[in-house]
Length: 517
Image (cartoon, rainbow, N blue to C red; front, side):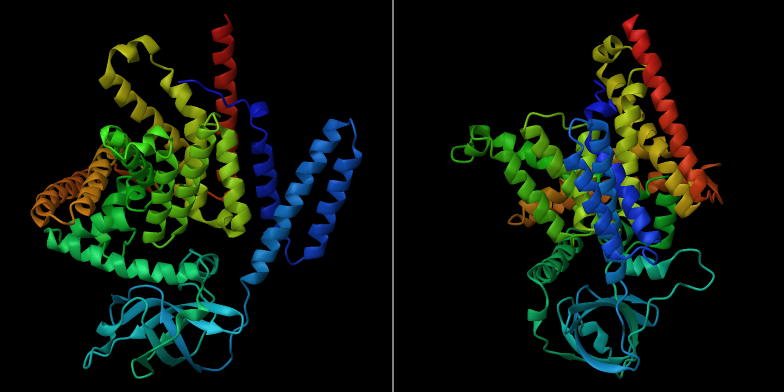
């Protein structure tokens, strides 16, 4: 495997780092530095760039300071936008359900959009269930209600270290509310106050409910259905605590959240499908005129819409799009420059992505894979790997899994306090099963006109999901399956990444010297 990751050949890495540093400063200095202060520094630095002339070092450093200032400006503005004033008294309002209601004990939970003079306000709502009339069972995504309740500032759970209030803010929620069962009724609400994207998402969520019925019709039930729904439609509310624990302890939680792994497999499925069209009249034009790649990207983004445009899916779809466009331009797709460009795009579009746990783990994993996979893969002789395809496949998977773990382990320990000891064994299980599950889900979609074929595919899907659940349950209950109670601080996590970069630099340096000899 070729390793083309010299930082001098990847100038966008410096730009991305400057933008991230500026955004971090923008959050913590937002109460000290006003917006016009960040803008003034950015303009001043750009003036230095224009006046630097032949002094390239001065100009490049001033440009990076300007990028950092723009990052600080964007983050400070985003932090200010999260602080919206709420009414002091309870009020009567119309609202639209943005998600399908989910029952938790005595309440149902749903996301509401409330029209205001400044646009839609997003609210996390809990509605007390009426166990007599059970009117809540008639509520579905896209329905309108008239309600009376107090809109409150998001607050954290008692005795919890997780900053739930900030998590809600980062995901666009302006308030929380509790609605008594007598204080709401179903109503007709005009959806025109919502943007076109939100209205499209509501329609797609309705279609997704029909897809859930397809899973039930082909025989999927219980936790097998819950895992299949989570892996294909991004809906995890059906998962039991035991299943979540098994996947977390075994180091396979990432397979339950739609991410780059899932979209990568779907991307490969679509490309494979178009390659089969080479000999089919009319359809072969996609391959002949190189239209298959753009059309596959369109399908990827339509799938992202279907699964609610969740941050992890949008992030993965953006990565795939950037990588594909770079490849079509004849550049190296798997480079630090491409990864940095993806990060820059996502941060400019939504600065708060920087604080998303999934964003941090995704980029840490891909960065670590780019840096360490070539070094680990090179531990075996290239001639030996070429002669033995099974060894090549096994060692490639081991190298990628270990490299990704090096990058994500500190963040997992920081956020979740756990290290999974058998992650390699789990990855061999979940990657193979995830591929089979996504292929089966595509076949269910393709054969919508043949119920008998769907039933056969459903039986195969049930077997694969059940086998994966059983295997991960076994892994999770092995002795020493995980190390619990890990709580590194921010400084320790930072020092781990400094250590990793130093190890990578030394390994690359000595590897290059050995090759020169």
